[in-house]
Image (cartoon, rainbow, N blue to C red):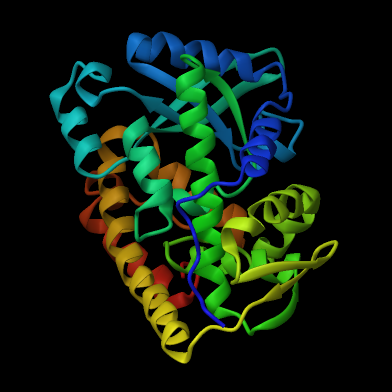
Length: 322
């Protein structure tokens, strides 16, 4: 059986499902973040996208909310030319934001990327940094206009197609289920970044909203044929691929792991400039996901980049980061 996949054609049903998901209501307190970001980026702002674990919690003072801020132009978005250069060189830039709430302080980190780079990341980037994140649930909190909205929907659709088509050749051909496909793909993308995730995290995410993943997978099937076909509800048939295709896909994922380590180190280094309290956030996240406490020493605070590499290497050796 052939193993080519038509990623140029996006099924209309997939766009429709994404539009419905993106329009789902969110907690009213998110409006405070939306207002702050609109004020911060002004006429450069194209869209605000909410994603991540905050979609599954009712207490927004627990943890950190994740946003992607899409802008039209890096130079227009910043008064600081260095930030514009860093954003264009290695998108996104990541910043920290706090706003007061009646129940306490709400915290967020937001990644800034141009709409054009977001589209390229979802469709063309070799590394899954964008297409892994936006094949998962998200909410569109603000868009400049209908044209930007449609571009985001298409980018998300490309992310889903890229995610599934990059996962399937690694799996055994024949009958498979929704959970196996998506859990396997998420685990591959986690391994392509320096992430501190508990075992079972990928499976847990799929189990939180299986209907979301099933609806989008069913809608994506026409563009993934003959690599994927629908058998029954949540049951799929993975088409056979050549041994060469299977080998090349495995090599690609291995290369993504090495590329991901380099990119993660560069992005973490960049975050020491853009992300206030980045060390405390990183230590909190590692402890939250693994239970292992990382001490922020005075030396680490004085030299966050150079000393941070040593800490990162220790965590890699202990298997905390993968």
